Amino acid sequence: MKGFPKVIKTKSDLVNTHKLVLKGRLDKEDWLAAVEKLENQNWIACPVIELSEDRKTVTIMFCNEAAAEQKVKNGSVYPTINAVETVTLEQTEEEIAENKTPIVHTVLTLSKALLTGTTTVFIPAAVTYYDRLGITEAEVEEMKGALA
Image (cartoon, rainbow, N blue to C red; front, side, top):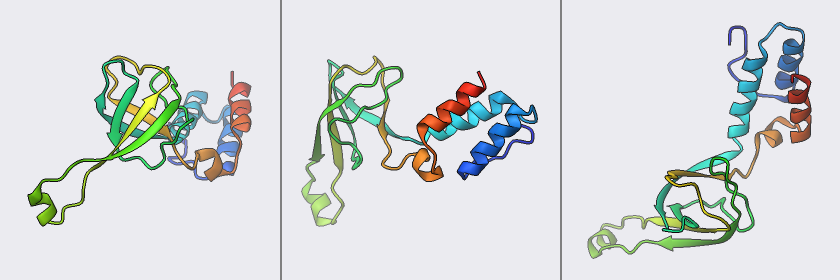
């Protein structure tokens, strides 16, 4: 990534680096890798605490962003969240006496099974990198297409 900016912070950064790729001053692979890195910011990685036998119910740490009708990312599988339940684990008398904060989990019921061996699911972030940069997904896809 010689000569490539470490961070793309604005729409103009993305557009200008794309123009430099088209002119041959920057490598196409570096630009595509930077866009992939940005696209990964559109998801919140949630480690799986428990997965049901049919892999359609998953328990994760509390995730306020999880909502019914969202698609979650699990490798090549994108199941829809059918239901979201917040569960507070019971505390011992000692934990209550020590004023410890209760542990809260989020339980997701999904439309289809997660992949075997799943250790992480990805929940859509409330604010995407498209929103932060002020660019549309279609504009980014168009720029990617111009490099094909």
